[in-house]
Image (cartoon, rainbow, N blue to C red; front, side):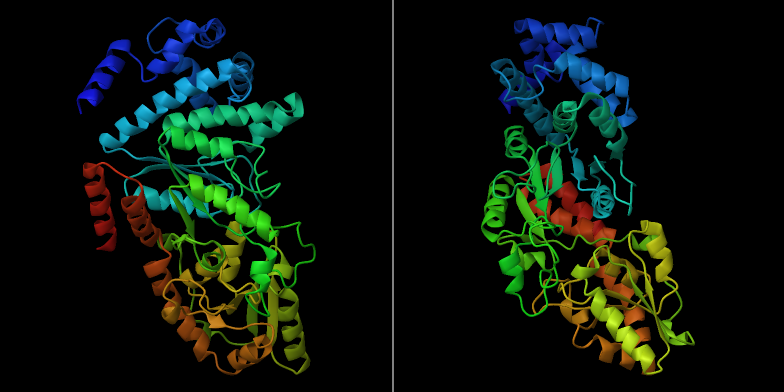
Length: 486
């Protein structure tokens, strides 16, 4: 405690949260010149303003002119492996950021960053953290057609940088890492990549959070939680061993979409595990990532979902929805064949298939269909299926034996695979009461297991078990989780 008081008093005397960086500026003339160029005003906090304050503006405002000024001024220091001066800069920064994190946690504050894979799950993770009282934000550098609803979106400024200044975008990522470790203490990243590029290179040439980045998180006292989303952990031999139907059984180009290589994928995941505070997975990923903690992070804000009418009350033909991004991974051709066969037999059934559409269009389409076929071969459901259940739309899906979905026995998913999909659809055409039962059970199942509140409780358990929180903060997180349970 006395050392903490001494450190706080020293920092107060020096007038900066970054005393090590300030001392580095006094010793290194090149860095002092960069600081003077970026923050001409004199003052004890000028180093923080020059580096972190300006990086904050770039992240929040997308100020391209300021970004290029920062890159030019800090170029000798941004990559810690470039020179001894750069290593000294990062050593000072990391030491300061470690103290900042310790002080924040002792004061009862938690700042988390979710990134950088631009999927809808990021926004749900942020919402769940906020439900616990965590100051949470999301960061992405690209966006998909599905969603661009993130707190910090750097796609436009990065694209301009690539077009006008080529490989300076790599330095931009280092600048964003400076911003991140100065402002956040908990990092939630998917296995495919983090803030620094290039990613991978230690088992997979394309997938994997940069090792240097993970080292910096550890040295700066950050908590790193790594998650599985799909391609970042899927290896061919392990998937093929799951049985006749699996994610790899219909893949048109092995090695193109996923990690694929079993030895390389295992090596990559082992390195990530060594640097992670905890490795997190759910569903089928629990079979593929040894030692992962099962956290149901396919999350829906149920308060924003309006269930549609019971499907048993709809008249006329059975409308089957199917919304794949990659049909060969979902068994699309088997569904199409089953529906064509039923139509040829005179049954009133129709397929509504949408691909590559914005997220809000998919949600709207769920209100117009009688049942959603999520997938028939991969062995577990995804976020689209959870959203459908939350809206009262019945879901058909193939589930592997023992797949780690929440409350498997209570899960209202109607199971089918390529061998049985025609029979299952035929039964639903003849008896829609089963659709009504599955649709009615969906919202309650999702609220209990896949809602923002449910994820908040799981995150609280994760933090309490792994994050080494100060006792007062542990008590606060536990109380927040209890309130979410009530």
